[in-house]
Structures are given as structure tokens and as C-alpha cells.
Length: 268
View: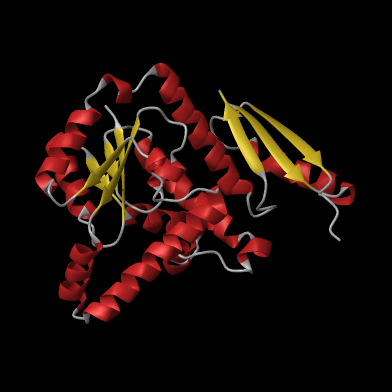
């Protein structure tokens, strides 16, 4: 039993690989479903959530934290699916949103730009120049997104357990390789890895419920014990702590709530 995330650029055959892997293993295959579910749970329009997880951050994002807030909703929806294992996720940012879970097999599918351009031209009915421009912009947006939120580049091979170049290795070869890797002991769910998953899910669920109070809060969970860290002025501290506890203590699975506050760094 495992969870497989497939990271891919546009028109790199990653979707096709993901669907065939899921069919072969009898796993659930999800992508856009998490965005739709997050939209329904948070009442945020789907297009805003898509842009949050795709577009590079704007100057405004650095002050409003809207991108972080929307991504929390998406992560919460994704974790609701993958907690039960046997899932292939080929949506955006799976390798980021499931960090720290040992039974997650992280795969990156790449292909030559010429092949991607050809597919883009065929499917969208555009010129080679236009296709190249679209793909290059898309790749750059994703790179800036990961740099801003996580300080890493999506192209960094160390982020993945497998990097597969679909060229000489065919789609079916890629499927064979991924299915074999998913069956390795290294990606078997253990009591420890399941606890890590449950803790991550509970922390994310709590954060999704309280993030509107202060978007830059950090939330951790350990066997039902919640730790919330927030930077807040003393004048607002008690009100924030009270609201956090009122919400978090009513979430199923939460046993204790601890809130640590500190003054924000002075701005000059």
C-alpha cells in the first residue's frame, strides 16, 4: 500500500502515466478533484485556488498571505483523500503538500521540450512559437511558486524518489517502473508513517479552520496535541488565543491545544 505523487510539466505525458499506474494497481487517481473539494469546503472560487497553486506570487501575496491560505485549503482536501492510501495524485504540488510521509513515492515525469511543444501545438491549434512561449511561461511560474513558498526548485531531482524521462523510455516503461517501485518495502505504510500522515492531516485540518484569524500561523500536531505558533502584538494576543482554542478544541481528534505567541519583529 502506498501513495504516489506524479509531478509533471504541461504536456509531458504525466497524466497518461498516472492514469495507467492507477489502473494497473487498482488505486484511486485524483488531480483536479482536490481543487473542487477545497473550493466547496472553503467557499473560495475554484479559479482562485488554481491560481494560488499555479501562478508565481505577486507583491500583494507577500503582504496578504492569500496564496498560503488557499494552499492550506488544497492541502486539507488532498489529505482527506490520501490518508487511506492506494492513491495516485498527479495534480500540482503533491510532493510539497505531502512532505515528511515515508510511504509517499514521489515521481517526476519529464520530456523533451520539442515533444512538449509538438503536443501543445496539436492540442491547442497554435504555432510553434506560441506553444514555446506558453510552456516556458508555465515552467517559470511553477519554478517561482516553489521558490517563494518552499525555497526549492521543482526541477531539483533530490525532491523525488524517481525521475523518469519519457523519450527512449516509453509511457508503458514508466508505468512498469513506478508500479515496481510502489511495491518496494521502502514505500510500505508502517505504523510510524501512518501516524505521521494522521498528524499532518489533523494539523492541516486545524490550520484550515483557523487560518482566517491569522494566515501566517504555524500548526503542528502530535497524537491529538496541537501546537499553534503565532506572532501577534500583546494587545491582540488574548483575543487571538481564545478564538484559536474555541475553534480547534471542537475539531474531532483534537485532545489538547497549546498556543505560543511572540511579538512580531519590528518593521523599519
